[in-house]
Length: 486
Image (cartoon, rainbow, N blue to C red; front, side, top):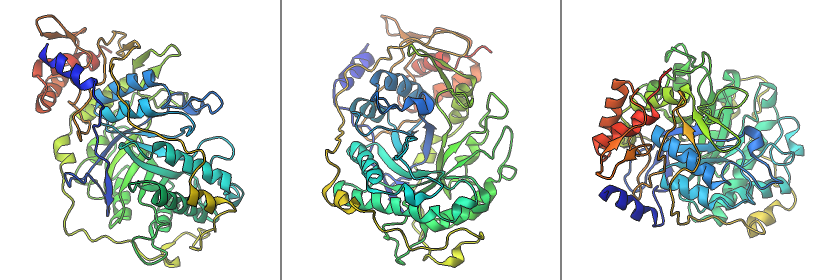
């Protein structure tokens, strides 16, 4: 009962769980601790592209009840970052941003949308680069700049998707990166990283990286350089390996990187259900010297069959086998060790000077003269978006999930709720082991189902105890969420 009262008291305060991160060289750094940060992420776009409806004022972060449901599930899994593809800057996101913040999760946000005029086109990009488009991207920055858990913005996603697009697209994507960074420099009180999410087209991948990361001015502070670089890669399928999946080529190709690199999507869905055996490698010694984690694609089940959770129109949800598999892989990791790494003091990685010799693919642009701002765009950068959307953390008083959520075997998860974390605490497995339990009047805990595999239960109980949660409570929590009968 004492723990329950403490949680209620915490829930009535303004939650401020996460510390805004900084980019220092090739790492995300927590400026308070000096520790590296590894992204443990999930792509979050409930409803797919239909989940973004500008006319209806709907996007993935507009419904706080849905956000509460999903933040609670992702918190139990151990996720610390969500990637959101399509957001509406005209919608208020305060409640959802505050919920994910309190749950210890960062947000990586794409500034574009699938609507005409809201993104650069791969075909004739010069026709989609105009002031109204830039105004929309700046509005996304305005809407999310004041949330401490806004980790980064993507200026583009897979705009270069084959060798042919390498001819004309690169200067325009780099120009958009430049423009967003200039807007942030003038209108945001902290530096928020901006970068590109690339398709894993190996024939142009490293040319793409070199084009966006080199320094036109010959200095690391060239404002048109990307602050981060990410890639969507599905090369590891089933029981693959570091070499068979080509991860060794990625590490070799990106070695010496001067910015954080991470997977903005991963998770091959062949076979199904997925086994996510790549997780141990992504967060292991072979990768962490170059990569800063990754984002699993994707949270909700859509027609393309990559989901972790099946959503229903009434707001109820059912965990899929993939959810349990991914949770199990995360549970094998030592997250305290992963997130407590200090960057090597000897790291002196610097961006190369832009030169045509960096480009190895015939036909890929080696022209580093960027497009000038379209008419009217400089005025927006100087004076800001009008009217400017504003966001701020707000007080949340009820952390309970209102919708029914079921395990893959159909059993209901009871008492599911977000557990607000302490200031500057980042979510990890074990942060919310008391969610999904039933507490009797004498303070004992029990679970709704007893079909939990003993090995899974005991492992996560230990993780929960290490996070300051009573072992009995941890066992109860994961017995409900991970107790699966296939």
